[in-house]
Image 1: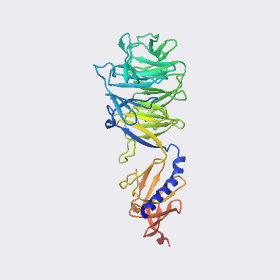
Image 2: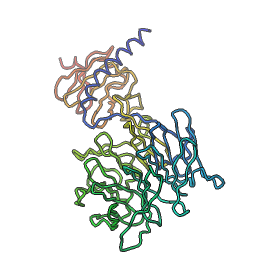
Image 3: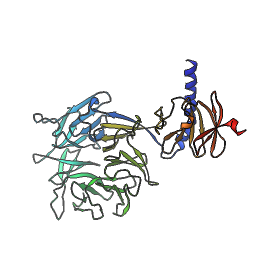
Length: 437
């Protein structure tokens, strides 16, 4: 190991141990690593609507142009074929789930299928000789619940492998295209319908009616039930509404009254104690429901490690607590929490990196601000709350070998080959230490 490399390696280790306590204790300051699956990795399209990781570890990815299954190394693609009844019946994939017995169910534009893992074929599901077409599936203890288009609600008892039609008691004909479904704790389903309203369905009595508590004015993109049994409703263009199961409105989140950065919410999921919100243009918004604070994952210019997509079609958390993001036009994105991140050299004035790639001194203040001395890039200031850097014109070219706090408004810095200077934090100027004598 060369002397130069050894010194830089030791400096890196010192910086790592210096910063880790800060990263560990900082609230809402998580770091993430992103891995993208694209067309070259076997996706059938770059817009992902449905995701499932089954009990065998296979990753199923549904797009608007077919289905992919990834086994960790190879990807198998499936497409509809009018000449083969053992393929998927439609290329637009609405949803994918697995039931309590491990069966994989896929709702497509051409109908519902079950994947037969032993035969490697898709079994098309029918009632009275007609395909069951719909969008949303829900898992029941003994099977699945499906809300098809232009027919009655159906229930598959998986052990019997038999569909049964459920009773529906309604004043009006049920002829709706349901977009999302959640099962409430009182044996009722809450369903959203395209171009319509929210509905309640009692699976025991068959009673079907509009949800009177809903106060939105537009189509509902998504309904979601969190671990606290709170109902989250995302009307198109209205942000996010939170209700109790009794229908009491608890709070509305939108761009005008909260940190939500986009009012078009397409999907919602709970992950690591926070609510992850997929938007159409604002990336992922992460809501800390304990304090109503938002953080965001979205592309940042000139920062290659930032989240790669702005439009999010689907969010999915697998049984191993891994988070998967289906984007619009940016493929499938795997999100993993990490304990540290890397900041590289950027152009002067860019807040997303250092003014020099070599760091030779550090100072952390009581408010957690970090002052960084670089080799030729002068002083950098790092704000850990928003993870941004500030560079200073007065110190460009300086090799800052040491930084200490002098007063509330001044630092004392040692510049290699030049001497000691005061650095004024307010007016961002340097003054020679000798001129004070």
